[in-house]
Image (cartoon, rainbow, N blue to C red; front, side, top):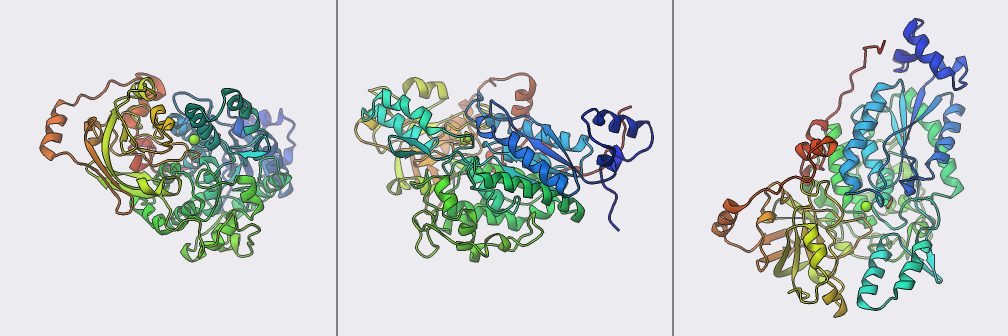
Length: 569
Ligand code: FES
Ligand code: MG
């Protein structure tokens, strides 16, 4: 005996309310039988011309619809707020939680039985998953897919990673401004998300590792016809999931999060996965903490993609993609339910690697023990993180003198000054760029290496902040320091000239200043005035949690799966 479908509360009644909903929907040409009780599948679309990474999602929605109709469902596409990482100020991350609210309330308010989440660009998939998790219908992900490899003068160009490298080359006088501008068109030459292992490809790959999408969703290029076929198959599958009542919470388990952490380490995935996984876990009531990420520390780096290596997502896909990585780390994975209704092992059992220079074997890795490290100490009592695979080995154990920027404006105005008193052993500290401080915890943690040092041939320096960095960035960058400066975290008390000790191997981030001195500084500390004083941004600043809790809003943690019973008329 199957339980009555949710959509019956919208379309099943033979009264005025049922009439109103069906009749108005019929103005789009849907026939009577669309409302006969078949599964209604919402297609939650973050397509937008202002989110270029997601510009292929209109077509993929059509693919999903084919599959839904084929399986006997009724597909209905709806838009939600889209977050264009490269286009939004002050940072798309400020709006991730707003997208999550939009998704949650749209799903709850409309008469759907299951949801297909069409996302891609960095914040879109996490925001969609967080929102969907708080309603907990059967849900499945289709990602936009990466752009084709960038090309310029016969060489490959990687989104984000290469623009950072080239900007440094221009600073050092190794690249002309003309060449720099010429790479712009070659870098982004098809629709799709960044084709480095940035946050978007990390997220689509982790969706695969967590069993939230069909196999190969992580890496198939945006314009590969097989992604359209995957969308079609996803449409078929979501109808079955509704029939099986296979909900998001059946797939989002402690085990699936642990598998994501292991996979992220092997992929050389983005540091941003940490805040998104923590926030998502909070929605489904799974106790996930920064400590859980330590299991990634022992996992070797297997994938040779930028920013931790040299290849791009197209190469990763053609080498076999996520299933190959999962097969290599299989002995570290936990049994876990997937949207296919089968264990995650089903995703990789038959995987084969077609290029060992792109995906290395577990026993012969690119780098041993390269997963994200959690650092703690008096500078970050609630933790900070560093990504060894994208860092310089010699700086992962380091002690140096701090050079402090109180604000992002101070950094921008001074970083390239010829008389900046820094050398290759200095530690740059940037304050007030956390969730409350900026606000929105932007990707400015990978502060530029000062021009003075770049000209001397220095390409990396230790950097510490309460900000994030782009998944496409590289360097010895210590991020997500919690609590943040604006919330009164000890990072607020650092002064230029203080000594700081960093040890990735032992997980230490210490400010070598006496407790008495820090107490004296604390007594003098004044909280900076907020930059935003109205609207959503005010609500965000008032309610955002710290990085170690995923920077979700405090009142959005958890879920509400109760039926909506009240009518609109
Ligand atoms: Fe959208 Fe990288 S900027 S995926
Ligand atoms: Mg980003």
